[in-house]
Image (cartoon, rainbow, N blue to C red):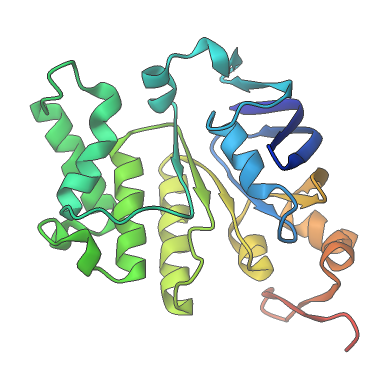
Length: 252
C-alpha cells in the first residue's frame, strides 16, 4: 500500500528520521507509537506526501509518490493532522471539502459528489449536525466531522495524527470504534496514538519508534511479548484475564 524505503527526513532544526524503512499493509490498522519527539508525526507526514524526505523513497501502490500529481494522490490517501484550524463553516461544508480532488475547474458539486458527502456524514455519525457551525461542536463531535471529510475524499488509506488526543475517555473509545468499523469496510488506517493499551487493543500492526528510528514492526501480541515497549517507555506491561492490556511504572 505505502512503502517507505530508507527514509531520512527532518526540518530546518535538524534530522528527525534516520534511515527508516516501513511497509504499511493494505486493509489493516497500523499504529505508530513511541516517546515524544521520536518522529511519529514526521513519518506520517512523509507517508502523506506532506514532507519530502532528504533521502530515501516513498512508494504508493508500487509507484513513487513524486509520480502522482496533487489531485491523484489526494484520491489515494487522506491525512487528518493533529493541529487544525477550526473554520467558521457548517459541518456539511467541511465534509464537502473532501470532494475537492474530484471537482472540475468550476468547483461545482455534482449529484454523485453530494451523495458521497451524505454517505460520509452518515458513516461518521454526523448527519444530525450537518447544519451546525463547526466551532459549536465538542472535541469528539469535531473529530467525527473531520473523519467524515476524509471519508468524503474516498481514499484507500486514511492517516490520522493522534485522533483521540484531548478527548474524554468515552469519546476516545467511540472514535477508535469508528475507525475499526471503517477498517472492516475496507479502509486502510494508519494513525499515531499515545495510549499504549489502546494501540495494542485496536491495531493489527504496531510500529514502535525511538529517537528517529524504527525499533520494530510487529503484531500487538508480538510487540507486547517482546518487552520492547517496556524498555522504550520505561514501563511494565500487563495483561489481565480478559486479555486487556495495561501499563504501570517500571519501578513499581
